[in-house]
Image (cartoon, rainbow, N blue to C red; front, side):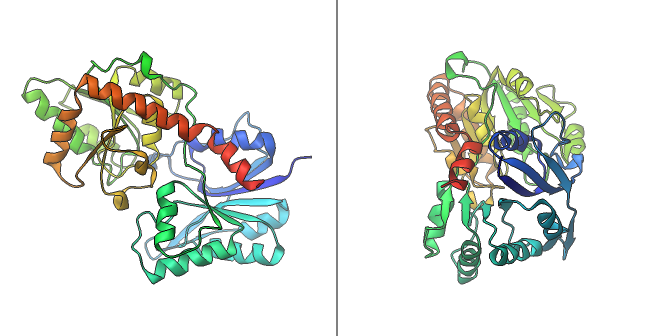
Length: 358
């Protein structure tokens, strides 16, 4: 009989489903999460034909403009499910998360928190206390990237309870560098169209290059609250194509076939791993503290991509133009795919299993 694993998330994102499916091979998986508006760009994550035991909606309520949140009925469902282990997101602003940690302390249910870590936090007593308590009350804390563990050490904390899992996604339709032609002039963006995505930088650079007689086509995959705004803004630019929400990996790979760069001109996250799975060199900004997640720390300048100066439109255009070099792109693309393999073998789900059973 399988052990019960309860997964608690703020929302059930489409790209996470394969991870939970893989966990279901080893555990009886139950998921608690809020429902989420498709307009935010997460997709419709209904469970069909799945090995996952059940998904229960646990609504999230925000207070003080999201500075404090509360996820309802967590303890109620834990008592009903009686999990052997709990795997939960660590949000210090979530009151129910701290209640959950204390509940598990008294009931002796092993609880594993996964966290981006203090990759974007200053070195201060406040964050030292915060992550000390988080580690003290958790069985283990799983961090997304090595850079986050480095920041934990900079806070002066012991790393004994922290473990790097490598946040990643497995692309079943990855593209080997040998099948890429870096002589093309097409660029891929994957991400939510929201404040901070900054696709203006990319689209404006493409228009600027067009005015100089250099034609670069941009494929934009993603939805979100700013989707219609950007479609209207660039409706007269035939080099920019919007696809909307696409979660089928085979279709994304097909769209990317002629692309030579994976660009996220704003605050990036897991998209960089998807780019690298397609043998696409990444172009992201250099301010890690501003990114949506710590995953852009995987990008090493002039190794598997390029970094441009945060907030500098001219530098973005300069670096973007410099990248349009077939020899350099071949080198970056080979290393991008190599990085992807290092991150996904073993898979993210298998790394979680290994850590839970350690």
